[in-house]
Length: 130
Image 1 (cartoon, helix red, strand yellow):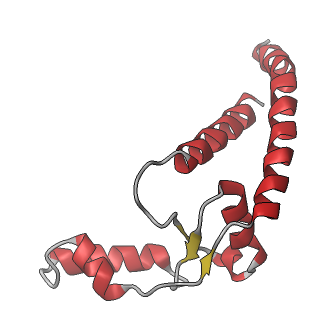
Image 2 (cartoon, helix red, strand yellow):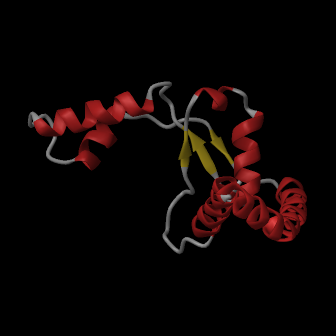
């Protein structure tokens, strides 16, 4: 149970860090099989209130490894150069005002619930020690 509480806390902190980033960047790139459903990247964009791009490749991890290999054998001088040469832009998703507002309201309810559950999780964890 404590592990669940920790994961919830980490996810919340990661989202807050991403949303408060002061860097001049597009937003983020997401990938994986679940992004084949256009609802999922839109949901992420709305939840983070940031524009997102879906990776143009189905195998982003393999492409990253290939980029590193290309740099290692001298085809490219650095990963940034390899990335520019070996990738293409994917579909972009912008947050919608309605979606972001809805998810912010739901997140406040979620936060209240996790705060109220903290003593329960602590009790369950304490019981598990005995």
